[in-house]
Image (cartoon, rainbow over all chains, first blue to last red; front, side, top):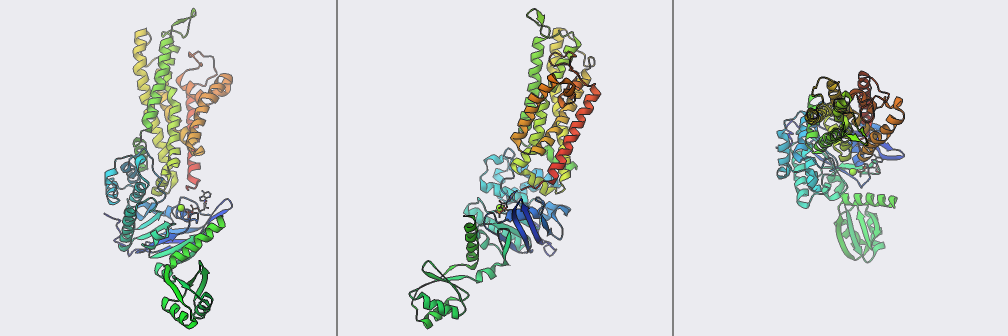
Length: 307
Length: 259
Ligand SMILES: Nc1ncnc2c1ncn2[C@@H]1O[C@H](COP(=O)(O)OP(=O)(O)O)[C@@H](O)[C@H]1O
Ligand SMILES: [Mg+2]
């Protein structure tokens, strides 16, 4: 029913090597390199305009890179023998002729790819669109279009999936379903690359995270590693004393909103530092995960640039 | 390649756009025909508006109405390619078949075939109305005399080739509305004016080629007053246009970023 990933021990990786794309004077993607591995969901995270879509489109041969290349299973997308069977892709949710039914849309792809047309019905079933199969896409909600794009991606039962903001427009139940679906695919050995500008979507499902902003990769690490570096929000009556004590203990501290934001130490170490400094704690919360922190910082920097 | 052509035909069949274009093509042909039937041999202000149906030119003019739908074949081609960009389905096409030349080749073949099929239907509809009208009015009911096979066959071919011109034009302009406006402006304005004002140039335009093929050498009524190529010359010119625009479609669509 789902993507057939049984041969997952085969090489089914995505290697992006120094991809760069300039539109006129805009460097939309600037030397992006990363690897997505089988059995993992790789989150491709970045604020709007970071260059995610352009990167994915270059990986799929839709946009010609200014330089660099992307390999899927060791080959460029355009050199794949039967691309739909090796790679499933869902780009924006706009790629449908509104006058065509969902089933016909998928049958066109099946016909062109030489897949049996029953795959269209199976994919519609998998993505929960069975009832809507014969309706024209004109009346589809954004969420239904996302499901249809996903159905299209899994038509050839590929072992590599590349999804661009697949959670956009999904309701909470749909997001939940998507998360389970991606998890399942990774668990059976597929390579799943999923882009998003919404942290929460990626955080709950990704094993590995690549963070981009303004066309550059800022972080490329296992999710666990990024989350470990979380910040503690510390309220105190003696901020200066506590700050000094914390820094002596090896913490990184910044002051914002009348609180100390502390990273590099755990709650117990903060307590000890407070005791040593004779500082009264009024608050001690693990306020944001490390990933959220990193991401917010990047997003904020981005908005600062724009404004 | 066969699979890609099948996919293109499925794309055309799975929306209703083709029905509209077929309706317009047949409707346009029959509208013109009815006009001719009404005026042939009728006295107006003491002289005949059109020669009577016993005149071979009038018989030719009756059947030549079938070619009135070529504009809609051009629009069919335009929509066939610009629609893919407009709706973003070109992404699907190029993801399934990253060798873009194959997609375009399949599209060209499919739309040529569709144009021929539409041409056939339009011609049949025209004959179905023209033949009884000629019989009632006492004109020739032979489908073999008066260049009728040439006119009808040429019309079918012209419809196929105009679809190719539409694909090329659409690939070049890419914006659907703009491309359709250019096509309509070209056919209704530029060609119409050049044909009358500069017939020695007009004969080399697609419309001039269609006139040559359909043996309508005059503007209205089929009198031989305009420069017109011989039928084989018109056929070659039109095939030339079809091929040139096919190449334009190939070259423009294959290289461009899809983003
Ligand atoms: N076809 C294009 N022409 C010009 N600029 C583009 C084009 N596509 C994207 N861009 C620009 O490139 C940058 C990255 O865009 P995109 O890849 O869509 O980012 P993301 O998907 O991360 O939101 C943006 O500044 C965008 O405006
Ligand atoms: Mg994007």
